[in-house]
Structure formats: C-alpha cells, structure tokens
Amino acid sequence: MGSLTFGAGSEVAPLPPKDVVLSLRTGKIRPFAGVKGLFSAINKQPRPGKVHLTVAGFAGDERQYIPHRSPDNAIHQYDPRHYDEWKKTLPDREHKFKVGAFGENLSTAHLSEANLCVGDKFRLGPDAIIQVTMIRQPCYKLNHRFEYKRMSSLIQSNGHTGWYYRVLQGGDVQEGDQMELIERINPRWSLSRVQHILYRDTNNMDAVAELSELEGLSQEFIDLFRDRLEKGTEDMDGRLLGDFAVPWRSYKLVEKTRLTPRVQKFIFESEDANIEPDELRFGRFPHVRLRFGPNAKFTRAYSVVSGDVRSFELGIAKDDNSRGGSLYLHENLEVGDVLEVAKGHNAAIPIITGDQEGPTTHIFILGGIGVTAFIGEIKALERKSADFEIHYAVRSREEATYLDQLPAKRTVVYAKNEDRRLDVAALIPPPDDCRSGCRAMVYCCGPSSLLIACREMTTKLGYPRSQTHFEEFGGATTGTGDPFEAEIKANGQVLQVPREKSLLEVLNEAGFEVDSSCLVGNCGTCMVDLCKGDVLHQGVALEDEQKESSILTCVSRGKGRIVIDC
Image (cartoon, rainbow, N blue to C red; front, side, top):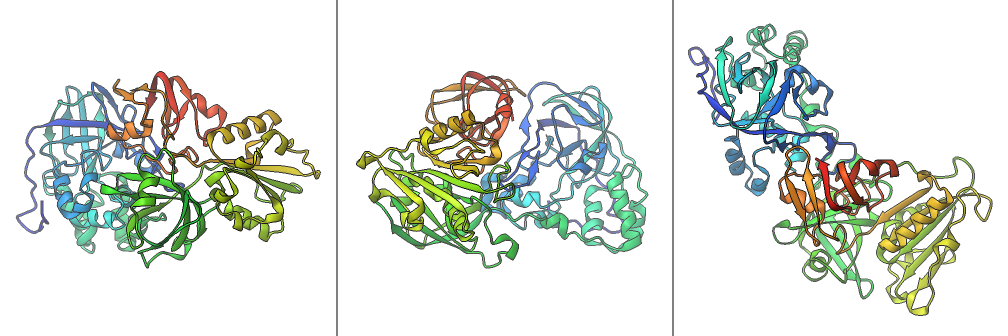
C-alpha cells in the first residue's frame, strides 16, 4: 500500500475480486471531541440484520456537513487493511485504529483506492446497485478524531482516504452480503490516480480537464476541477486545519501545594509553545479534562481556578471514596510529570451577564470544593463593583479552600463543626423581588444534596434558566447507583450497567465511543436519545422538556431497562 507512480502504460487499474461486506455501520450527529460547537456523525455503530438502502444512504445514518448530504456521498467505505498501516505510522495511537474509526459505513476485504475506479458499478447484496463517485477528502475533524493535529494532512499524503458511492438502485443490505463489480467505465481513472492529480500533480491541466468532464465523478469534484482550470489550485488549509484547536495537549505539573487537609493546588504548564493567541483564554466557568494514570486509564474534569491555556491552576480535593482518580493525583502525580489536558466547555444555556435589564444581585451558594467553579466569575464581578453575595458551606474553616480569595465582607461561611448550617430557602429570593429591589442570579456548585435543594427552590419560585447556573463537581459515586439494563435500539443489544459504573463507561467499553467532556452532567456532550423507559436524571445540562427524550450518560441512570439510540 505504498506510493504509486502514474505514467504511460501503468494507468489501467486491476479489477477487484468479488468481495463480501464485513461490517455495516450507521451513526447519528452528536457533539464531537469535547470541542464547543463541533458536531459529527463519525461515531458509527455496527448494524446487524438487514438495513434498508436508498438514494439518501442507509436507514438511520446521518451526515452533519451539508455538502456530505449529497446523493454522491450516500455511502462511505474504508479499506480495513489501512488500519495496520496506521498502527505502524502512529504507534502511540494504536488503540484508536480499529474498524469504524474513520466513520465508514462499509468494510470489505479486498477493495481499495488502487483497484477501484471512478464510476465503477457494484451489485451490493441481492438488489442494490451502487457507483463509486470520489475519494473522501480528509478534513480537520480527523485531527480531533485521532487527537493528532497533522492527521488530515497525513491522510492526504499517504492516500488512505476511503471513498464514496451514490446509490443507483436501493435494497436491503446486511453483513455477509456479496459485493461484485458489474461495470467499469473509466479503467484508467483509479481512485489512487485521482488522488495523485488532486494532491500531488496539481498543475497537470490536461488531466484536470479530463476529470472535469469525467462520467460518474461526483458533482463536488467536477466543480472542484473546473474551478482549478479557471483559478488554479485551491487552498486546502481550511479543510485540513479547520477553525478548531485539537483538544488534547501535553502539560507538565510545575507546582503541587497542600491548601487544606483534603485539597491540593496543582499548577500545570503547556508543553506546546505554539498556542495561537485566540486559543489562550478560557471561557466563562472554565474547566479542563485531565487524562492520566497507568495507560492513561483515568479521565477527570476539574474547574480552572485561574490562569490561561499556557498555565493554569486547579484545586483538587481527595475524595473520601475515590475510585482512583483524585487518589492518584494526590499520591502519585509528582512535579515534572506530564499528562494530557483538554479544554472543556459548558452547556450553551444563556445566562445573564450583567445589568442588561436592571440591577442584578448575584447569589453564590457553594459547598466544599465547589468554590473552584466560580472563583473566576466572583473576581470578574468584583472588578465591576457588581452586587453579589457568597454563601460557603464547609466541614470546618480549616477546610474552607480558597477562602482567602473571596472578599470577606461579601462572604458568609457555614462551618459544620460550628453548628452553622446553610438554609437555601432563606437565601434565595423570588427572581424579580430581590431584597434590594433588583433581579437575582443564583449560582450553585457543591454536593448533590445542595444542588437538589437549590434547584427545587428556584423551580418553586419560578426562576428562568437564564437566572440560574448550577454545576456538579462530581465525586467517586458520580454516575453510579442501582444497576439497570440499556438496550440499543439499532441492534437490540442489551448492556448491563452495574452499580459501580456509569452508562457512559459501559457504552464506551462496548465500542460505542460516546463523546464526553465535563463527566459530571454540566455540558451535555455525552447525551444520547432516550427511546423508552424511566430515568433518574442527574446533572444540569438538560432542560426539563429534553429529559423526556434524552439522557446524560455520564451521570443519569435508568430504572429497570431503558432503550437508547446512540
């Protein structure tokens, strides 16, 4: 599968042998790679049994990028033999290279870019007829998929792109069906030769002119080659690089300091000196994901206390019932150690940011390490001389983490060992009848009991979502609870979700590759469709009406058996 040379006498492609469908997959559009604003249907799942194929593609398959919804892009196929080559090229990412990783609908044993030609017609299964239309042009989303910022460029260079078909005649298709070439109309135009003209011999205008009129070629490529004839070679950087940074970066621990008996401060610095200026700043209520431990087995999300993408501070509590994450960071991670970090994002729920509609009082109700979620917001309000108050519940003043960073005149501490308890009902006024005649904005982060109390009180008082912002800080028991079963709608597979694991963990272990970000129900990245069954909803990312048809897999749990579509 090395590079090919194209010249006189070497341009007729070999005929492919009769083949068989090894894998058939479909997927839905989902948030992708934990990057805000990025969506994809690349996480395709196996579909056992017959799947109906039409001009639009396989039933249940979605395509996020609008041009990819063309009939010319109805089916994507990838040569599974390429995965062995990728494992050799990028051995540190070997675990990512498995069938389905490129978002292909079909895998077969013998078809490749070298033995397929534009316009080739195949009988697929007993009834369907499909036609090769073009290669897949690699784009920046593959950089995110494989967490390697040069991935799309590398695919373009080595030619392991995959290809597309249009559907000439529909029918039912399933794994094990035969796939046989029934007509070849362009024997000199293998997909590998198209790649050669597209990416390497770009100034071969005789070939470009021939391609611009080639029977069977996709309209997208015909337009591309016609534009090349008129304007010259197109700029490929936008497609290859995109507008989104690859999320995971290497960071070194440069400081580790104990703040309280249970909390330590961790300061990390980026190993990447080439961070773009527009990537430096965190957003509002920032958090990051850490990937660490033996074989990077742990992934945890933490609020950022201060700093930017070059260097930032985290305050991490050692959980009393740690399943390994906080325990490892406290006891095993040493200054100088390097781990991977990704910038997280929050749910896109609009909340008020100032006094747009009259005076606003900001009420912070915090529990324990939950203080870290809002230190940045509190400092921003302090700089603006805004009206705010802080209510901070802790075990003892000795364990009041970051108390020295909170303005003393605006902060009330409720220490359990002093028998001073925080009463949510006494702290939250009606949303438009604040004590000082202004509007109230309520923030809360802490243990589940505190969040539930705040949510129930704001709901009772009629707070709109724009006047509340709640964040879970998670813990050893986040996402765990009574065991239940999750049935996959597409294939009827039933997964057992044990007491000690989240639905997200079980789905990913089963190969469904559901994306996630915050891991505590704040952002909604891990949401899947709920088709049937009762759910104990946790987290804050879903509106009430969304809970009827969606579930946050990182924190919520079913009752008995639920049916989901992911």
